[in-house]
Image (cartoon, rainbow, N blue to C red; front, side):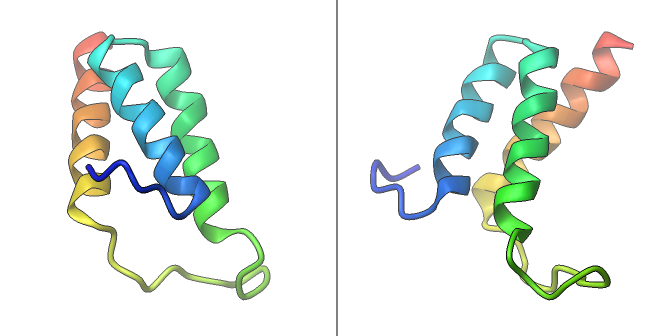
Length: 73
């Protein structure tokens, strides 16, 4: 990932990558929630549905996060 972080969600993504690498499920859970909130805040109201596709970096770390959760359970 580029070192140029333009959005809050980019910075949270970086932290999430580290938490997943370290196998820290609790922190990863909190960061996934924070990332989701940062990406959808101030958009479209109660019935808003995200229609943008995530960048490959987001998809990759979320897949790693899912794998971490699966292996922990």
